[in-house]
Each structure stands twice: as C-alpha cells, then as structure tokens.
Image 1 (cartoon, helix red, strand yellow):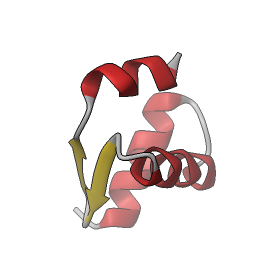
Image 2 (spheres, one colour; image 1 turned 120 degrees about the vertical axis):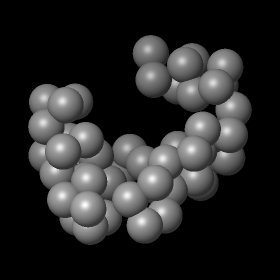
Image 3 (cartoon, one colour; image 1 turned 30 degrees about the vertical axis):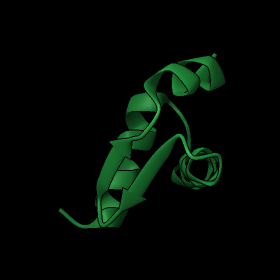
Length: 54
C-alpha cells in the first residue's frame, strides 16, 4: 500500500478529505503526539492525543 492510498483510506474512515487528514497528521506530529512516515502512524503520546482529538 502506498502512503497516498493509506491517506485516502484514513480520510475515508474519518469522513474527511485526504488534504484535511494530512494537515491534522502534520499538526499532531509537530506537537509530538505521533509520528507518520511511509504509510505508518506511530502514536507517541496516547493521552495527549486523546485530548487533542476531542
């Protein structure tokens, strides 16, 4: 699976566009909540991520 395909699938699960999904992932990564690369997402701080996600 390519990263673009993974992003499209994740966006579809979240009910949003791939572009919005990418922006949110970058924001969460910048805040140290997760790391994403090559179609993989690693949660670095689950409690803070839960808070950030609402």
